[in-house]
Length: 159
Image (cartoon, rainbow, N blue to C red; front, top):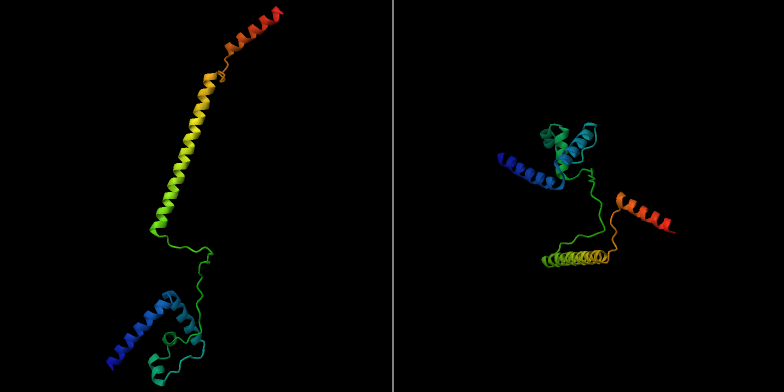
């Protein structure tokens, strides 16, 4: 008698482990609760139980629902929301591919810095050329404007 109970316990543990792989503990609770409610509302039992098994279950709807779940005869399905599939496939890069990408990126950065250096040298050359030729005008001060006006007036009087 005790050996039978131990065998049943081991079988139930193995079956429960298989169920836990298939469902989460919350899904199992939801399934058992829903089926137990159905049985309490006089739904037909989906298992063929002997009188001994019915007496052992003591007409407990939760235990009956558990037996039905273990026997995998429940017509209850679980719909899990899954993330949308993307069309882009992600592949794992090898070390060589990673190294190549890093080298390309470093080369791009080097080219960009070279271009920036060339731009700066060209700008500096242009600035020095402009300064050498004297094209840059100084900021006029009010005193300079007075001098220019006096020169213009003197030129006008001479005419």
